[in-house]
Length: 309
Image (cartoon, rainbow, N blue to C red; front, side, top):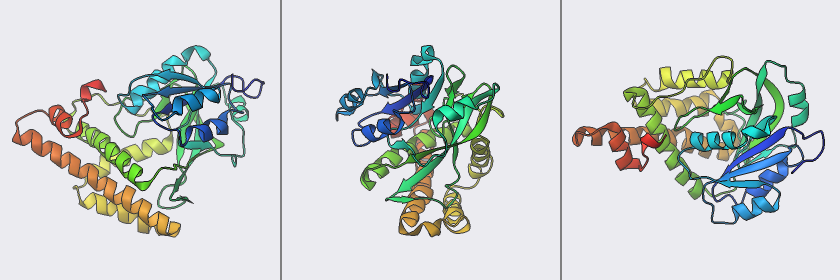
C-alpha cells in the first residue's frame, strides 16, 4: 500500500507504461502520498521501468498493447474490485505540487451525483510552459468513481466518460516529458497514424466510434470534438493545417511563449496536422489503386490492424 492514512483511502492511481524509466519514479513520487495504491499497466518495458515501479511500491500488471483506449480500459477493469476513485496519470506527468487542493479534499467535496472530476493539465515543451495558443486552460477528466467510468474506444483523441455528472477542481497535472525531440517526433508519427485512422473512420464508418455524452464528459472536450469533426475535418486538407497553425500561433497568441512556443506550435500544429493529412491521402490512394478496402490499406501503410481496436 502506498498511502496508509484516511487522507489517501479510496483513491487509486493508474499509470500506463512502456519504457518509462526516465519518468516513472518522478510520476509515482508525485502521487504516492495522496493515493492508497498505485497500479502500473506495462506493455513490455525492457529499460527497468517495471523494477523501478515495484521498488516504489506500485503493483505492476503486464498486458500487451493494442491502443491507448484498450489498455486503459484493461486497467480500469483490473482495478474494479478496489472501489473508491481512480486517478489516471501518464508516466511523463506529475501531480503538480502547485495544486491548491489535495485529491482527498476534492473527492470528499464531490456531490453524490458527481462521478468525474476535471483537472487542469499543463503542458511543458523544451523546458517552457505553453500558456498560449489555445493550450490553456485544458480541462481533462482524470479522476472518477471506480466502476462509473470507461475510456472511449477510439484510436486517437480518446477521453474518459462517466455515468453521472462531472465537476471542475483545483488539481493540476503537468506534462513534463524529458525525452528528446527525436523521440517526440517518432511518437507523433505514431499519433498521426492513429489520428488518420479516426479521420478515415469518420468518412468511411468501418469502426464504431463512441460519442461524448453531455453530462459524463468534459464540456471542453465535447466542444473540441465538435469543432474537429464538424468543421476541421470538412475543411480541405492542406488549407486546414495552415489555417490551424495561424489560428494558434497568431490569433491565439502562441508567439508569446517565445522560441519554444514557435517550435511547439509549428511541430504540433502544422507539421503533425500535415502528416495526418498526408497519411490519409496515402491510404485512400493505395486503396483506390489496389482496389482494396480502407482497413486493408491502413494495415499496409501503418501496420495497425483496425479490427483489433
